[in-house]
Length: 323
Image (cartoon, rainbow, N blue to C red; front, side, top):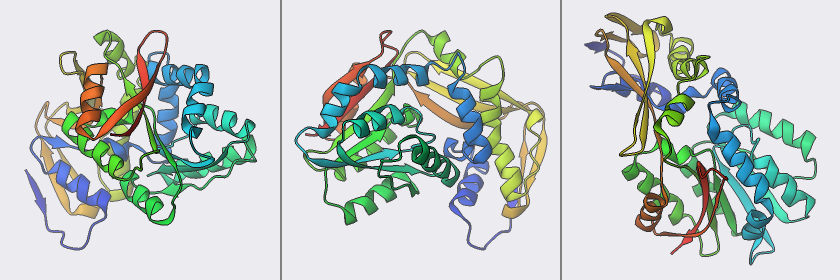
């Protein structure tokens, strides 16, 4: 049940919150976890012992930085290193430092929806790698890639780390990969992190830690709605719930209403009623194996030209080129 009398133009955030909370079943996009508070919580998540993804990818980049750098610079005197969803850049700095130390001719273009994350990243890079040429770009991935394509004719190496592609179900992932592929030329490289299928309990623990950090991250979207859209969500009225299907490799996060409750969001002129145990779906975290990644790549007109794994084979980074 909901009511809405708002007719004036809404921002994308407002539009998507309205659409999600008036849908059946309800949902909210995980990309809105990230504001200044959400950025900080996610940095805490990446240091959790249960959250293996960051350490695995960090180790891959550290142990294979020479081979990865050679792949990036192959056949080209200069290139743009473009990172989609750069965040705090902790892992990327391994490559940036190596490339800078070896005097490769490149510019780093971090893209992120969070201006706060970009500001912090730029400041830290100025301190840690002062010789690095950096051009932060705030916005969505694909819009910003289009802008880059329109003004530059230089080899692109596009990074998409952290298994962010896992936030998309397979049909959405194919669409996204196709859109990136359309922006690529023959010598461009798309370097993507894919979390691998593994013990289901290991995966569940990564998204449902005992300290409740992931719960706070999941609920931050409600806090953000309260702050920015004058909502009155009571976060304690919601249960953080994680599921994982080992057959499909799909982990899902939900906020579950513990009781019947009414929530008003003043900026949307919107009132919704949630039934006891009604869900708001907030995030998908897809897991993969080589067969699935090969299929996704082929569907998108891409081919795997290299892959790098941690010693436990928990996680892999794949490099793609256009077919």
